[in-house]
Length: 449
Image (tube, rainbow, N blue to C red; front, side, top):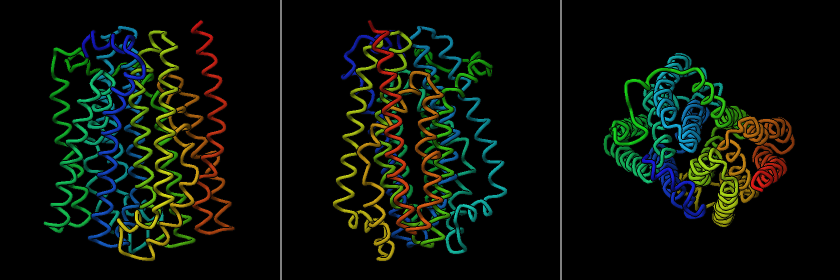
């Protein structure tokens, strides 16, 4: 990022800035989500309903990988934004080097710890003899390339935070398009099955990572690779982890929740109920990813202006981000409530699976509009470096409220009880979030006087 580019973060109108930064992030998120949906559709239509259930078993491991990726990537991106706002460019470059080293270390550890116990873990996640084979074939390849995935996601987050949201978007879109092309080739032409989908993912991320490395090798940018930055600094590592702890715990909690949901669905509905959750999760995640794209667009603007003590600009970005988040999730609610069967049918020809998924859609999405507010607000705390509040809000929605409900409600209503736990936890978490964000807004307004 050039110095002129950093000054735009404190001078350009916040609304215009948010659109400029959020739009590329949203497009990138939509592209990634469309790949995930295409992945499920291709596998479901080609390999059948049980293959979708097998793919659903991989969600906890994918969330676990995302958790460690966000621990470093989100923490590093926030640190870079704040340091740029403080005009501390040397520290911002050191963050880049530390993010690279941490991603390599964590990616290797996760792979080495998980691979030897993969089959047992998948059974623990609610798998059966009919579905574990699909999940194992997929995750063996994904986990083997985990370091590439961590580096790709981490560097792309830093590229966006350092002032190049459009370039980060193009890298993501390129990766997704290549992924879908390879997915169709490997699954439908070469008949590699679910393993072909995994190979498509790893190869496309490797190519995108090579592009990112070339970008960060350009020495005419403020944030670039140099020999002196590849040294772990205790303070930088701790700062990255403290800020990244919120999304890490959020993803870790999501991992635990998915395991418990799969376990409950297997108990009360069997393999097809897990497959239905896989479909619902893919569609819901697409809209959540759009809101996360909004928060990613907010992050460098909020972090920079918070570091520069320009609090009115921080509040204006927050307000506009919440409005966009609520609108996004309201669109999701309307579409799913009107067309649950049509959406389910796109993934599978199995009428039983379509019926289970459609009923689940109608319940799970019933309070989706308020989730936009909750996600944007909790991520706002993360963007200003208040990790404890962000962590608390993340855990409230996914652990403190949802897990007890998962234990209780299915005992009375079976599979329907599992679906009901999600909107119930959304409601409680949103109320708590509203209380905390209102206090933060008052505090920032008092500092603006």
